[in-house]
Length: 182
Image (cartoon, rainbow, N blue to C red; front, side, top):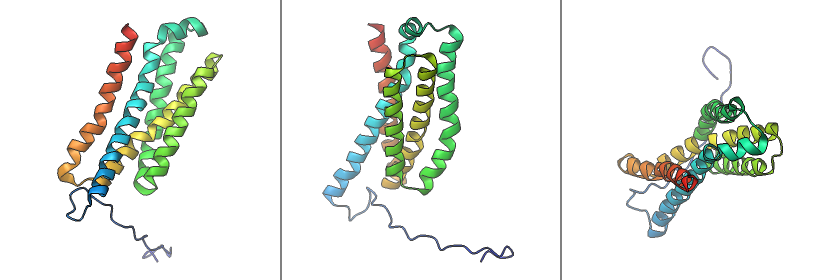
């Protein structure tokens, strides 16, 4: 019971502590598994940011195909950012309390499906809704990956691992705009 409120509380679930990379008892296979997680999250980050920047590199082809004006082009980018920001906070909160693996998988599947729907879009509203969906899916990735890496690595090694994972952002942006310039 909570004092003074008369509300019953359930006991906190007992969670197994995560295997962290600094433990003396981490086997070589566990160590490889930890680094495989970093590589997978790095790849997800690259794809996440690549997908985020592609519409900026393809503004003119989209403008011609869908007969868009400047306001519509601006709204495509703005809608993504607004949705990403609005959904990022609650999804980050969920990442702290629920299965990170399932949340990340949900985010990747959502953003992938919505990216595919953009390829099938024949009207501006379809294209707009696909970018909104991409924003929702991608909003799950950053907080989930950051939290997950925080579980896997101790504070003494965490900054290097997070820097490696986040370097996918710059790799993707460079790749998109380098290929668009050709």
